[in-house]
Image 1 (cartoon, rainbow, N blue to C red):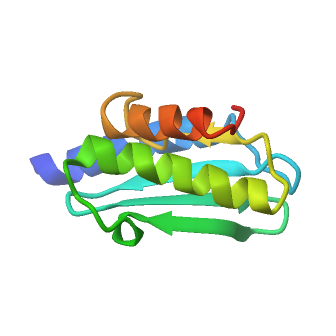
Image 2 (image 1 turned 120 degrees about the vertical axis):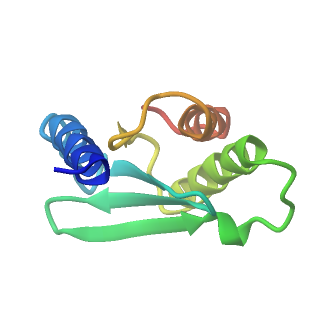
Length: 117
């Protein structure tokens, strides 16, 4: 295998390991993060129905100071939208990413806005 295939396999394993311990419901949905080089995408997912309740992307934030500030604002935005549909608790799914940098900023922003993990 080449280096890129090996990297993708390891990422997939990490994601499955995290996801095996997490199950979202309608009352306590899974708070999923997808991180790319250009943007950040957040979702609240009800796994029992297989439906996305709320989704937010970095395209919705107009000001771009840096990626960390944008991530924190996104966390606050998704928390506000969740409280609008009466969701106060979520299960945090960091995917295959470390709890560091943008992922940590999203979590801190959501907690500041009142979402409980």
